[in-house]
Image (tube, rainbow, N blue to C red; front, top):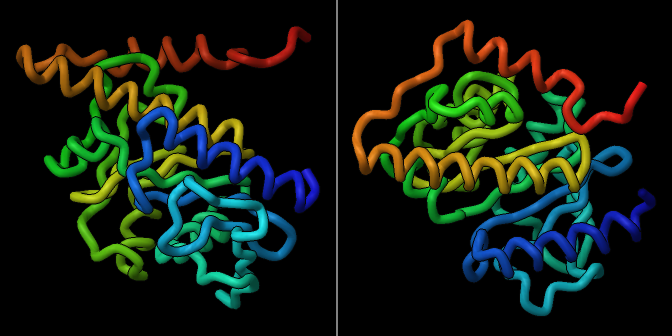
Length: 213
């Protein structure tokens, strides 16, 4: 995508997440890697009234360009792109189920094979740090190691992907798995897949969603 297309897609997905109930008020933020930096939603903005011109371009140095300040969470967006070059987009939300689990500071264990779509046999919860700080970014990077998503203790969740479409799908998957895990916990302690069972599921996903050879 060129810059204008990325801006349009960022606004579209921001509004879609709000319509799905994943974002509330001004909470949450989205970004897309572009050139020598990234485009990100502005600080203090919700989906309502957001336009392509409101998005902020941030250089990897931290220098921002635009009429608004970048999201207060721009640090972990920048650091994710720097450490994980396979990612082209990052979504951060305070969606209900994921945030509820984050407030319990619980990892999601291998209770369901769909965790494989997010890169491993668990979804980690990062240690707590104040929002908008380098400490939070550092904690998120640890929790994201080998994964496409993580929870943020007493805060929310992060999902990333090769592009905005994949980051959006991963966001949906995190919330769905969080909701299922909370429901399972309400009835007892879920039976976890064994390492062998999970490895078999991962193998089944090798060609998942890819064109026929």
